[in-house]
Image (cartoon, rainbow, N blue to C red; front, side, top):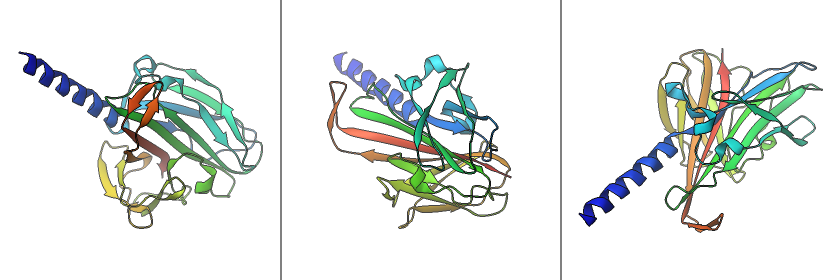
Length: 237
């Protein structure tokens, strides 16, 4: 009986861990903006590909206590205040000059999943005018970037760059989630790049994951690995 209980506990912990791993944090905002006009930014948690957006009171651990940050053309990093909705948090900023803007989240969940620490990251770009965003504007430790965010179109190849600790992320799994509910996994090449051809117009969310086997302590508890999941959201015309 004791062995059965232990096996059931292991199964439940595995189920919880896999459920957390499947969920992601992502940002939704328009890819373009205008000087002097409010730009709305929404942050969701759940599974984009299945249109599953969790209620904010059911987000894992303390993920709903994240901070939303903005880096503008002047490279200054400022925090955007957010307010909760039913299944998202909403913030806004008003561009004061033309150029590229990056909004981002980086939050390490307080709770461990077994002996694993979970680090949720997300970013999106807004272009005001014609200056394209650069990856260096995003200060997250794990990140994705699309140079041609303004020209992403159906049936036109999109190149996605990935970075870990500001170095190209080789051999990482990247998942592409489409507005139709279809998804595909790709592997980054030696330059940290994946390419895909969008078949539908609408919002796409791309996710990259990394497992760091470095052990440590987090809020007084031992962990032996850190899972990082970073998403990048943009629109295809």
